[in-house]
Each structure stands twice: as C-alpha cells, then as structure tokens.
Image (cartoon, rainbow, N blue to C red; front, side):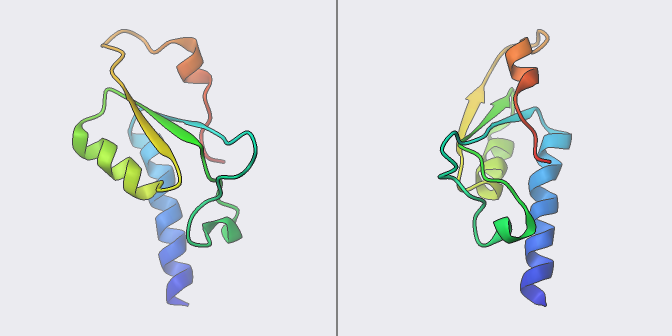
Length: 93
C-alpha cells in the first residue's frame, strides 16, 4: 500500500512541473524510455528529453530528479514569446 501512495505522489509531482514551469517533453520514438520504478504500471509515460525554458538551476535539478529517464535540456530563449515548436511539444496525459 505504501508503494502505491509513493508512486501516485511521484506521478503528481512529475505532472506539476509541467503546470508550474516552462517544461516540454519529447516522447521516445522507439519507446525504449519507460517511466521509472514501475510508474508505467499506472499509465505514466517516459520521455526521451525534457526541454526547460529559462529555469533556475534548482528547478532544472528538480526536473532531473522527477524524470530520471529523461535527458534534461536547459534552453535560455530569452524573455520573448516561446517559439511555436516549443509550445507544440508534449505534456503528460
């Protein structure tokens, strides 16, 4: 029972970075990246890359801890509006 609660809380935290921070996901093309530690059992997706826009170093570290299966890319795109390709990248379902 404890593992289930821990896993569901981890999934909630993973999704919250997409709501709070400018983070977008690149899903794996070959599905070789699965969500870690059995999170896939709850339908959680793994991602090949996560692109973070203008995040503080602590936030980039947090994203890396929550998504250990992903390569985290910091993109400092300035203060202008994010490009269309960034906005079209994925988010967890």
